[in-house]
Image (cartoon, rainbow, N blue to C red; front, side, top):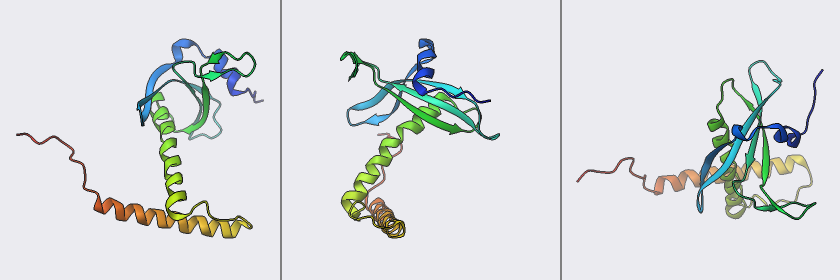
Length: 156
């Protein structure tokens, strides 16, 4: 018999010592630091583990709907991982979400990803496929014309 619990119930029982302050990636204003914790859940498949990754802001930045007080914003990620995956690997993967969102924003502006009026799934699929192919082509061409960054500092 499986017991199901909501993510906020699990968050409530996670000890404060389980949280680690880590940067998931660099943002426009520097490193994006959060407090991270992971709770291992029951496995659904033999080859994978399931984790609830909890991300909490470092300072109170969100108003509580009931009390109106400032509280820390909390986000949850359900992760299916290979056995032995570390918290550092989980938070790095969660930080990649912003890069994906930026790529979709670029595709909307450059190749018209958001210009289709969806009537049928097949036409939406074709439009999205052509847009992603065009975006991949533009990215490949752009990467050829941008000089590579030096990997090491030359000695004088």
